[in-house]
Amino acid sequence: MSEPDSTKGTLLKEKLNAIPIKYRDCEPEDLIISDCLNRIEEEIKDDDDVVLIGSSLGGFLSAKTALNCSNVKQIILFNPAIIPPTVDINTIQDMPQKILQDMQDNRLFKQEINADIYILAGTNDDVVPTEWVLEFAKAQQATIKFLHDDHSLTTNINQIPSMVMNIIGKKH
Image 1 (spheres, rainbow, N blue to C red):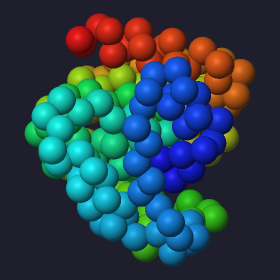
Image 2 (image 1 turned 90 degrees about the horizontal axis):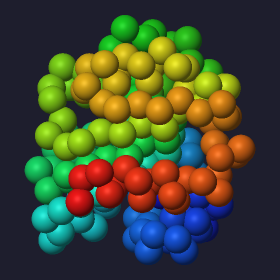
Image 3 (image 1 turned 45 degrees about the vertical axis):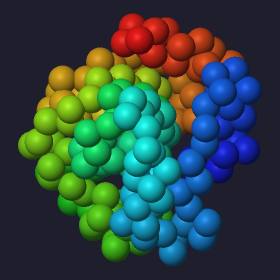
């Protein structure tokens, strides 16, 4: 989590005993994707049954980590910012091109992630286009649930822990 003390982060810690991984300690525009991935991989390296939960950029990082780490068994993504290879990143505003280039990884659409993938997506997300989520979900044969909600899942925020528990319970 970039913000372990966010509303979602706090709920997941309190209700599920989730262990937040702070992957960023810089300004968003100074973010280096490989540094974030290295931090996450370092945190999970000694666990052989990892469940990663990520929202937006954290969803991308969770998927990319699962692609590279066989110990990730399940990923739960909230409005994941996973950019399809067909998207012209030059048209995306308010994000440095270097970060966007690092976030557009064709392998997420061409190579199977060896983990169960569950996605919760807001139908009123004004940050991550629904088409991106659908394209990733199709490529990875992910399970997706649409919620009448925004990018932050504000309307359903208090139900997130029980939704996550239901998903985890299906596997464990």
